[in-house]
Length: 288
Image (cartoon, rainbow, N blue to C red):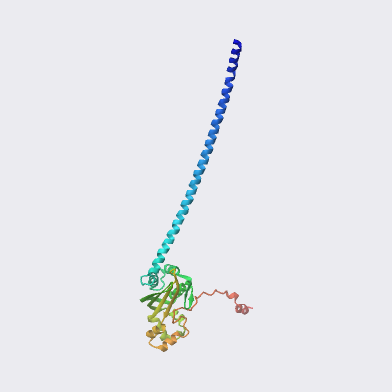
């Protein structure tokens, strides 16, 4: 009996370490699982946080763009309201644009300011801007360059301004004197009838010609110039300069400049390519 109890005790003592080792293994596995779960949880958490940051950054960028768009719309509305609120007055935007034209071109085209002058024209006119004998802002730019070529002096002297509205259109009319003095070669090109008329030619070249003109600017609802024209009274100006309608008739005969609009009808001269005399047919025949 005693031996059996002792044997059972001994058997119990022999199995205890095995159970403890198994428990430790299970505990280690639990710890590893918890660590793995924790790592996975941390990864998911970091991924979620990163996704939130990315989403927030995109939302901020989108909102920033929307704010900029709304600000531009607001500014456009403010400008538009201001434009329409005052466009029919002498202090409105159309009138100020028209007077800025006369300020920039007061003395014609200036080599020092030609870039600024051209930028202004292209900012307020378009390829669709028209006049009685032209279409497109390029023509206006070219005409001013030709005036610079043919005349030694040009000056605007605005006299009065009138502003009116027709629907969405705004019309600005400016009465102005335009004083010009031509170059000799330029005058001969514009008025070929003066070739051989030395006395008359001298009068035209040596004297200032002061032309009364009415300049019309038509603005659309966006503030762009859709129509720009000049109504000249060149006949009256030449009569006051020369003193004779007969002389005026002679000068204007076959003229290359419009007496009613001031449009120069001379194409830009292009240098002819030099021809090698060896390629000339007559030269080749003469040497044969």
